[in-house]
Length: 192
Image (tube, rainbow, N blue to C red; front, side, top):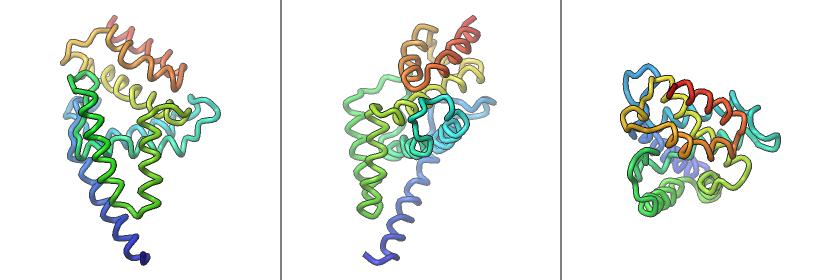
């Protein structure tokens, strides 16, 4: 493969990734002016990792976590967003996301596509320390957003304190107990 062929494939992938900006999520921006899109969410999570990386276990590689977070929702280009408070069939959503990962990462030159898809899969499986921290941030950021937005999707969906603890808590705590301690205080204040 010539260098230009590889570059063309990379540019094709990056153009395709631009479509993530059009995937609207349920979560509002903190100012309540509109809902965030999945590209904004991914960027914000990468920033969370950069800023809050010291809250992870010492063996966590924050650079890898940032990579995971930039890629974790790219499959939503084809599969759409599956809101945490929605009613989505997890098997069907999983199949849609797997097919999307094959297609989207398949746009890249072979080895690079394989490497980035493996990073995406590692996030999905959530077994490594890096993935556990990345997944904790993927729950922590929307929790912070909802509290700051006066309830956001929680108010819209009549979500209770118990549901917040059940849906957010285990994942946040698995990646960063200190972030879960902080989140519990935010939730307690919000639900008063």
